[in-house]
Image (spheres, rainbow, N blue to C red):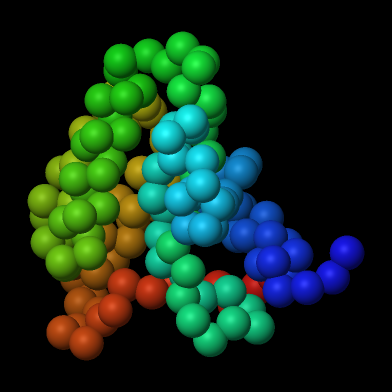
Length: 138
């Protein structure tokens, strides 16, 4: 199998390790499945071999499966944290990701974003920051 979508799938599979996730999907796949599956936005990334960034999501489970209220609450707080992150509101984002970790200890994406926010709080990415994470590895 060859082609652009196959290459993207391969890059996303490799990018999972940076977020501690198992199944990462592109915004294109997300738009097709969002009514039937739980997923959460992970990042806006540029993968090796691509010039344009792509929004990626963690595929969690089918909406037919039972998901605890606790986990769904964590996803709501995570979404708020991501919104603060995108507008460089580091303290508010840190608070949200710490709340996520109180609800679901060691949640890998929350750990990653909390760490990024602390780093950016003390080493600002600057006003021209576009929020894109460049993946340097396959």
